[in-house]
Length: 291
Image (cartoon, rainbow, N blue to C red; front, side, top):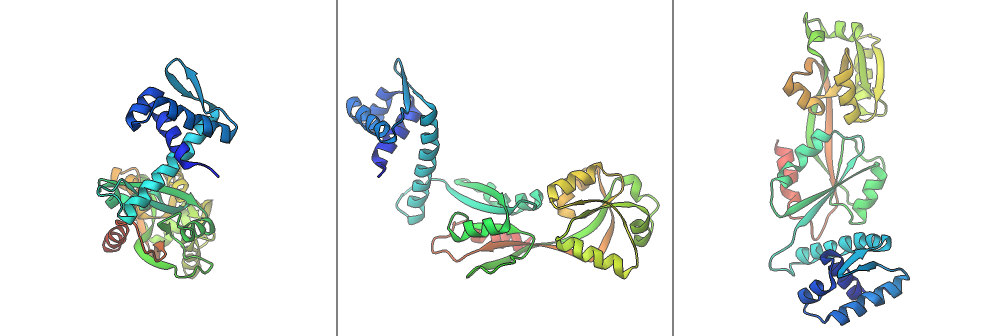
């Protein structure tokens, strides 16, 4: 089995870059420290350092080992802080999963309270719903952000509604001139839409069907970040939640041409019961639901 005592000494020397300095820092004889590293190299069957004078330079295998060691000891410190072992807890990381197609503005809005808190870090992972829920169940994530309800059941999954955003037609300022009726905009202007199976697309299709309108669809995009970029470049209209293009609306690059009655996008935070939840998670969920 891997000797983590040896791994920790390797980790210290790798960060110090000097055997003598590392030995003094750990109050251990340099020869003993060298023996620990030699034992680890023998175990791996790979040299981890190249000795260049007094400097210890990592080999390719050493860089790989250091990346793992960094992760291992960081998680160990998190564990100590979570269990209350340390009098002065080290940085605790809120591990967030987000659907790959989710609005970046929504993610930043959700995470802003954590960013403002000293002593806490953030890890953000994008992926598919099934992957993220599996990571949540395996204690690798604290929360998953989504704009769709999970299609498959997860035991004890808690669904928090953190935001509801109106969906509108947006476009460049010249398109909005003339104050046409909503039906005229939908008939006359080329439109960019979220693609299926987005709930926005489903609701939009039902909306124009009720109005007996066949829109000119020129693009369908399943990624909100990409939809935002297409809306900036497109000279017609785009159907988007306003939070997706908040920066463009604030700067005047895009304007809200018309609201789409009854069309809303709902955003969720998905969690599981934890005996040791991240200390900031309840506050972040509460602030999101209040805003």
